Image 1 (cartoon, rainbow, N blue to C red):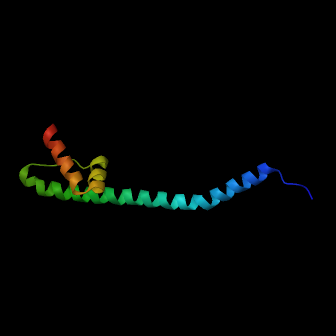
Image 2 (cartoon, helix red, strand yellow):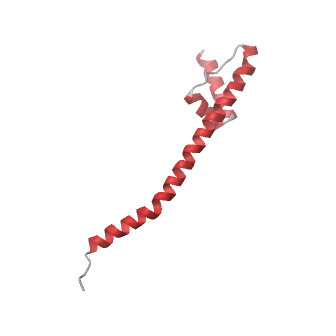
Image 3 (tube, helix red, strand yellow):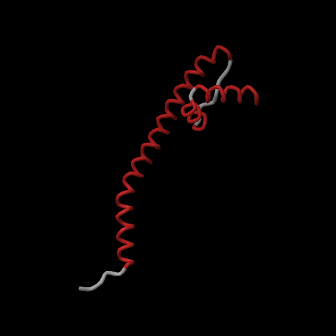
Length: 90
């Protein structure tokens, strides 16, 4: 009976670990991407509401990818940060 070289066992073990771990990594990555996308859409909706209310006071925060993600991920503190930043810079 021929003896199997050690490198074959190492490669087989590495492939087994990749085969077991890759679906878990992909699942977490897709969940993170979905959470960021949802936060961005929610942040954009909140910014539109803030801009709608801010029309009375001649106040508006631009709605773009960065501001939508910032307000979506950070929530109310993110919107306050955007408002203070706009107030200080303009």
